[in-house]
Each structure stands twice: as C-alpha cells, then as structure tokens.
Image (cartoon, rainbow, N blue to C red; front, side):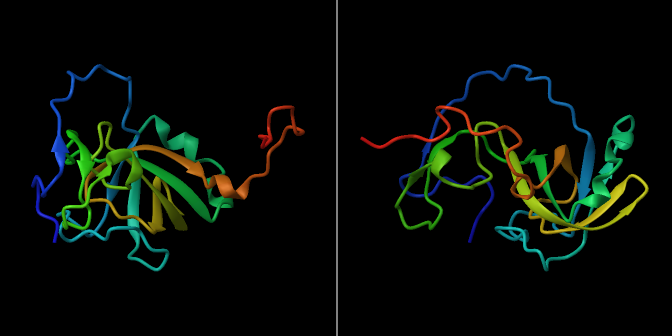
Length: 164
C-alpha cells in the first residue's frame, strides 16, 4: 500500500536545487473521482470512469478539430507529488530502481502522461476515459496520440542505426 510521503527501505532522497521557472502555463484543470493517491489507479484504463478536462481561456480555441481524434496524450502537472527521490522501491520490498526507470509520480519535474480516450467534447470541456490523476490536477498540454501519425519526411541518413 502506498502511503503519502513515505521513504521505503533502500529508497534514496536528495535535496533538490531551488526551482527555476520553466515558463509552464496551466491550460486547464482535470476533474476525476480520486482525491487521494491511495484511491487513484496506478495506470489509466480505457474502460475507466469518465473524467473531465476543463480548458481555460484563452486556450479554448485550441480545441478546434480535436474531436477528429479518438485518443489523446494528456500531459499534466502532478502538483502533490514529492520531487526528491532518485531511487525508489515500487514493490516496497527493498529493491530499488532509479526514478527515471519508473513511471512513478515522484519525479524531479512531476509531469504525468496518459493516453485518454475521447468520449465527447462539450464546449471547452473534454470528457475522456483513461486518466489516473487526482481531482484538480493542473493540465499542461493535450496532443493527438502520436501513434496515430506516420513520419512526414522521407527517411534520412542517420534515421536507422547500423550495428557493427
């Protein structure tokens, strides 16, 4: 069971440097049924509950055409996550892995991603399935799922790595 802000056996925390402004702008807010990390699923599911993504002004016009896509990449700021662990024990068994080898919400820059299934667009609110974040999570960006696109440029030298 995950407990808020705990350090598990063999996990390593660091004192992070003072943050510098990356210029991120929250473009909306995500509404889900979950108010605690203990309640939230570990990964979103396409058959999960319908969640709401509310887009703020002046970004609402950026939704034009989004209904053409069934799947969306949703990028969000995990505003309640710790940011200091460099080694984590996801199984709480003492075995640790580097943070960058995990999908844990505990990250130096806690950006979360989900592939969401678009259910409907109601004005400036998207109804989606497949999220795993907490209610009130700030939205960073939306993009059509990249697996829906093929490369637009012809193959270039260096696109394929040769094995010696």
